[in-house]
Length: 438
Picture 1 (cartoon, rainbow, N blue to C red):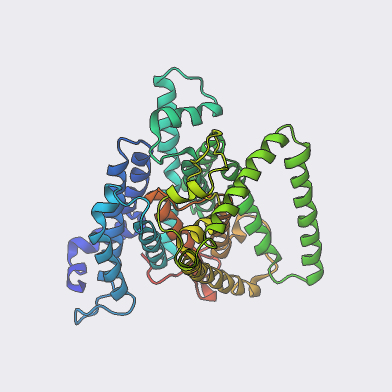
Picture 2: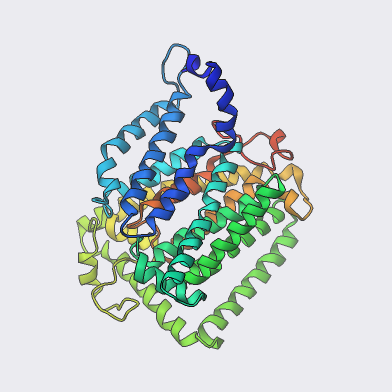
């Protein structure tokens, strides 16, 4: 491998590959193809190719001069073999509700752990620009069908001509993640051109969030970014300031709840919709207590048994027996996988929280920080990305029936496990060093 990289041709193109990571262009292409039901298998196939390429590259970069794999790269070889064995089931969506969904989350997490400062910035850029072709596809469909260009039409267009994700809520989860990526790509942009591209991608992504009609998508991205911004700037501050902030945040939360459920024009609809969602989450959670084997192992994959148990809960169309999922990831995992599934989920959450805690600890010597884009650090970006995932985690079931979302969940969650030495602050805007600079 070292001899191959020392060839004159590779020496000339290697800086270009490092700067632009053209293989990551498969991500926006895959995301665009997945929007349509007729082309989503092709999109998932390209996603499998991207996963395999990134795992192979990480594995080969860890081969020493004696051609022996070292350290973490041994595990990359294992994950690559698991991906190849399951490639048919994943690409053809034969196992869309089976165990491969957790394999894809793990693969995304492993690849995210390999990314260094430059790689993260470029990968965020490729994910950000994916919002541009998505918005273009909606505009093209509206023009072809002579529909008016309004936000309300986006959901109609998706449900009538696209449906590649199987439902508008899963598409909303996707655009929420992409919009959050666009925000932090804009903050880390090093040139006026990339910043302009980031702003355009951010606007396109949030238009799609608004058009999806999902309240989580509409409020999730700005709320996650705001909370991350506040936490970073309160890090290391006096307890009195923290107390005032928590009291103010608690009061604001109560006011918003009153508005949402009592005072707003849509208060009645909000109460009905959210109460049904909470009841669905409660019912799925209760499944693990309906039998000894279900407490440990859950009911397994699929929604046939939960639909019978939770038949009394209508879906968004008012139909009974088709609730489909728990509208809460914790309850969904508990119902399908029982106590062992919850332990597995807890392990992942602990990894993320430990990583975020370590990143926040490294910021203390630089406080207080001035306002503005120059104060942005990778700890803030990682916290914002994971808060966006957490809001989805609470409000819906984000990992089911969508391979694109599954990979992105793992990839963005892995932003929490990157760390950097103190000297990397400043010029690199707090981006991680990672296990590789690629």
